[in-house]
Image (cartoon, rainbow, N blue to C red):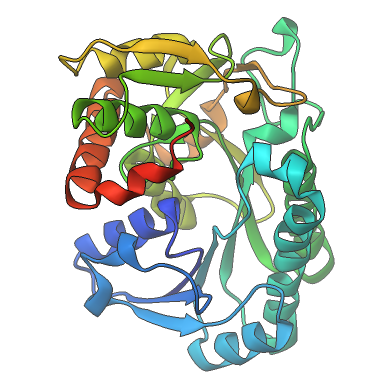
Length: 330
C-alpha cells in the first residue's frame, strides 16, 4: 500500500512512519517535507522511506506529488501546532493549518484519486468546557480559545465539507494530550523534561520553569496514538469524527511530579509569566467510547513509561548535543 504522510519529519509523523516500517508489511511510505525541515526524527528509518520536497501552501507541488505517488492513504499531520505561538503568529498559524489543509484536499479532488484521508484535528476545538460536558464527546460544541484552536476547527470542517461535497473519504480525529520521546521542547512535558535533563547534566541550574500547572489533562503516549491512527484507516467510517486520548487524568503538576521522581536531582519550580497563555483551556477529559467501540483500540503504555522515556530522550540528546540547552528559558 502507498502511504503519504504530511509532517513526516515532526513528532507524530516520524513516530507513525517508524510504526508502519516496523510492521514489516512492505508498505511504501512517502513523506512531504520542506527543504529546511530537519530530518533528525527519521534517523532510524531514513533509508526505508521516500521524502519528497513540497509545501502545503504550494498547491502545484501537492498536485504534482499526489499525481506521481497516487497514495491509497494520506495521513495529514503537518501543522503549526503550538498554541502559545498561535497568539504571536495568528496569520501564519491560520495560513499553514487552514489554507494548507484546503490545498491538500483540493489536490486530492483535482487529481481524481480516491484515498482515505486522515485529517488530524485537535481536542483544542472544544475549548474550555463546563464540568457538565465532562467527559467530552464528539458532539460537544466548539469553543476555540486560541488562533490554533480556530485553525483546527476550520481543518475539521473542511474535511467534513469535502466528504459531503465530493465524497473524498476523510476521517477526522480529535487527539487529546499526547507526549513521548521526540516531542518538541515548546510543549509542556517535553520542556520540563529538557530542563530536568539539563539540570542533571550541570548545563543549567536545577530549576524547572513552568506555566499553569493547575490545568487538568488526560495523557496518552504518542506510540499509542500512532497505533490508533493505523487501526483507524481500516476500521473507521469516512465522514466521521473520533476523539482519541489516554485514560490517565491528572493536573500538569501531578504529571511533572511523576517525571521528576525519575531523577535523583532536587529541582525548584518557578512560574515564568512568558509561559502563561492569554486564554487557557484548563479542563480536558475525553470520552473515547466511539473510537474504542469501532476499533477495539485501547491505550497500552503506562504514563510512567511515557514520562521516563521522554526524560531519557532529553538526557541522551543533551549529553550528545549540549548546545541544544540554549533554548531553555533563563
